[in-house]
Length: 113
Image (cartoon, rainbow, N blue to C red; front, side, top):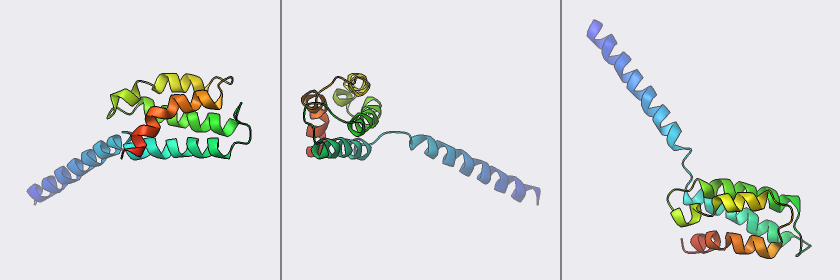
């Protein structure tokens, strides 16, 4: 009887560890995560009425994209622009053209999938 209880306890413990491990994996940014955030930025740019300066929604969307990009280890070339993109998201003097140039590698990546 003691062996069965120990076996069940071990099985429960292993299952708990596996679920913690899998929960940790959910923090890994995927291509879908990055492209989803890119789509939001592209949509905000398309919806913007002022092509010279952009609104707060674009800053917010760019910030969210930058956070995904800077942690996107699967694509080091895209990951490399993450910090610059984050800086741009926090800079209120960037133009739409500058943002479009910054996100161009992400656009190309997402288009090629």
